[in-house]
Image (cartoon, rainbow, N blue to C red; front, side, top):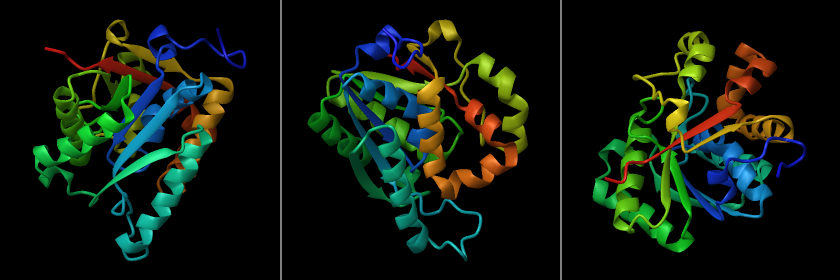
Length: 245
């Protein structure tokens, strides 16, 4: 069954009653999973999000935007972005932006495991070990979440956000032009995905609004590439199941 005339959710997504996302910075959740969150909420499901930092280092102009000024801005942006997709359950871990790689795995995993125990999700979604862009904070959150999932008995499914060869063919030049990757990005064949969401109609509008809510991070980029291109760029969300072995 579809919503608003849009494609029906894949069976793996349609069955999610409770979704938990675990991310490093405000806006990670919007780029990689706001469509997924929207679909789960449309179906009456519960969505909770964990963010490890306030993203207070996320600026090219630290004199105008010192951490103590940028952090509350990004907190507000995150709340507004989540509201665009109907999500109001959020947990901060209160680490410093850019320092997650120095946090012991035991500490990070214990905090994520505590949230998993409270939320009891059907599916947990986060970065893959590659950290999507290669960012050290992203890689750390992936490691914490994977270890927490193991410690909590793998009761939930664990999905990693990924990209397909088709995405790289379509957007590779643009990705290179804006310097998106710090390291080699993930590539997963569509046949290996546990879920792929191609957002159109109202769901794509919601995602665009969720991204725009993170204006301190997204406004300049959207102006650079244009609204139509920006909206299409991240209109597909792809996920691969974490290995269980």
